Every structure is written in C-alpha cells, then in structure tokens.
Length: 458
Ligand code: SF4
Ligand code: SF4
Image (tube, rainbow, N blue to C red; front, side, top):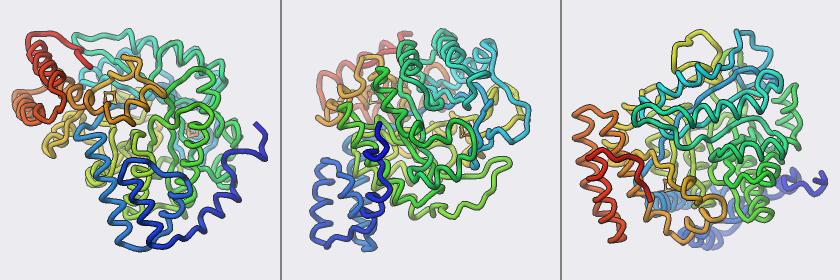
C-alpha cells in the first residue's frame, strides 16, 4: 500500500477536527442517525466538537434507541483466554511488555484443557483467545493447536462454540490458517491511530511498525476472514482523533471488502504492573460515555464490546448507550482460571465479579444474558451478516437465541434460585419475539431443552 495514499491521513484528520457546523446541520445529521442510517466520518467530525448539551442529549437518546431497537435486551457474554504472555514488544502501557520481568508462561495443551474446563463450567460458549507476540515461543502453529484443543474440549453439556482470536498483526498466509481452523472474529486493537503517538508508545518490537499494524485487517480479509473487530486503547491519544481514525478505517474496509468492522471494542487505559500511570489523554467518565454513544450512532450495526477494565457502574451505564457484548468472570493472566496467582497480568480488572454474579445482575436489570454463537455457525458472517443486520431481520433471531441459551445455562449451571429467576425472565420476554413462527418454535425448543436437548438455535 502506498504510504501517501494511506487511509489514515494525519493532516486530513486534523482538518476534520476543525469542522464546526450550524445547529440546523447538526439536527440534519442526527435525523439521519435516528433513522439508523449510520454516519460518515465527516458527520462524526461535525458532532464530535459540539458543546451544545441539547445535542449531546439527543445523541444519547438516539444511541439508546438504536441499542433498544437493533440489539434489544440481549447482552452477549464472552471470556478471554490468555494462552501465552511471551512478548517481544515494548508497548509502554502493557504489563506483558518484554522489559517487565516475571516468569513468562505459555499453556500446554493439558493446561488449555484445564482452563477451558473451568470456563465451560462457568457456562461460557464464546472465548477470545489472547496472546502476546513472540514468533519463537508463540508461533502460529501453537495458536492453531490451542484453538483446535479448545474446540475439541467437551465437558458434559459444556463446549466452546466460537473462538475469537486477538493475536498480533500477521501475514495473509497465517490469517488463512486461522480462517481454516474456524475462528470467529479476528480482533486487533489499533491502540492509537495517531502515528506519532503510536511510535512513542511502541518503543521496540515488530508492533512498532505502524503501517504493518494498521493494515492487518486488509491482510486478514485477503486471507478469507469475514469478521474483524477493531478498537483503540482510549487514553493514549485525543479520543476525538481516535474516533475519526476508527471511522476512516471502517470506511476503508467497507470500500475495499464490502464490510467494515464486525465489532468495535472500547478499552480505556488502566493500570498494569510496571506501567507509568500518567497518561495525558486519559478519558474522563463523561467523555467516555459520549464517545461510546457517538460510535453507537455512527455504526449502528457494529457490535460494541466492553471488558472488565470498566467498573460495574460504568458497564451498566454503557450498556444503555450501546454496548452489546461484555466479558464476565475474566482472568487476564495466562493460566489464571486454574491456579496461577503470581504471574504478570496485562492490566488490572475493575469488575472482578464472577460470571454467575454478572449474569444474575444482568437479569435483575431485565437484560437477557446471551451465550449465542448462532450467526457464525449458520454462516451469517461478513457482508451476509451485515445485510441481515441492516434489514433489521437479525433481531428476529437474537432474542430467541438469547432466551434459549439462557435456558441452557440455567439448566446446566444455575442454582434453584437462578433457574427461577431465569424462567421468570424468559416468560416475560418470550412475547417480545415478534415473528409468530419463531416465537412458537422458540417455545417448543425451550421445552425440548428441559427434556435434555441442547444447542438449539436459529
Ligand atoms: Fe505485547 Fe500486546 Fe502487550 Fe504490546 S500490548 S506488550 S504486543 S502483549
Ligand atoms: Fe449475535 Fe447472531 Fe446470536 Fe444475534 S443471532 S446474538 S447477532 S450470534
């Protein structure tokens, strides 16, 4: 890719950041957002600088409306699985950076099985495999073997049905191998779109190459991966710049491959061992809520993910503004689910509740925790998924799948109290399934599950 035509153009983003529009123009942009049309990067630039509280109120309202209308009350659950903390990079903000001294570890296949056993006992069906970058200690063959081991590991009714992968930027050939082994989404955080800041934070190692990192999704899609998940680490640079970077990246992928980000993650910088805690661009809670709402209205059909970096209160707030996936009961250490206590961790958790507690907490708020992995298994990926999402038809299957997976979870892992709560919620939500045929079929499936069947989905 020629560098001068690169889709992230620093000068262009800085020009965009100066855009100011009239109140009438802002209203026109928000009217489009309200119709779920999504926004261009120029629209986003126009909104990002508004200081008019009435405009922000409207942005929050539209984000809430989109959340309700497109995603409904389901919240998809996942857990990270750290397989190796070997890393040859020196990313200033990360506890795994190569100059942090702690005993490095990568999981053996037996250890993977032990970790997955615990995750399956928690009821998880969807994992995000995470690894530092180290071509010697953590080559692609090792990552592939881990994924195969995870998919093969079955425990009573427990199984992992979708493995998303978050590993360093790599070659088309390696992405092809990941596709062949059956990964769900390939996730890679840009960290920061600002090249200058990027180079300041990535002191040494292959990740320092901004262009190689930023074009990773191009190679992933060339390698056949349909679903890619982007994100930045908010706090490394001006969040307004980062949002425009995300929008431009998304538009680039849409233009070139017909589909943009499947998901966007919104991690916010937090402390880690051996990490300098002073980040001049730290994002305040208020700005963080604004940026989540803005992304929600700009790309209404892209799932938004939040991790355990955020507190329970913040997660609660952000779920209302558009977050559709959260992790629960997470460990961010290699081997952390089993027993390892003294290793390095990538960052410090702010929500350390168990998966069980988080699921119950979601139900108390009338939200439906979902362990659904149906789209990927039905071949609804890439542009096929996006066209279904854009037509509004996806929600016909999201809610019933959420209710069925909750039923499955409650039968296999829930206490009596939990089952009662889940059944009460399911009863309440079933009438919300609009399509008569699907509603009836979902009711039938719930009974089949009580009679011992599992893994029923639309
Ligand atoms: Fe390594 Fe990733 Fe941490 Fe950088 S962010 S030090 S690449 S694990
Ligand atoms: Fe996600 Fe598809 Fe399941 Fe909806 S039906 S929750 S979009 S996997």
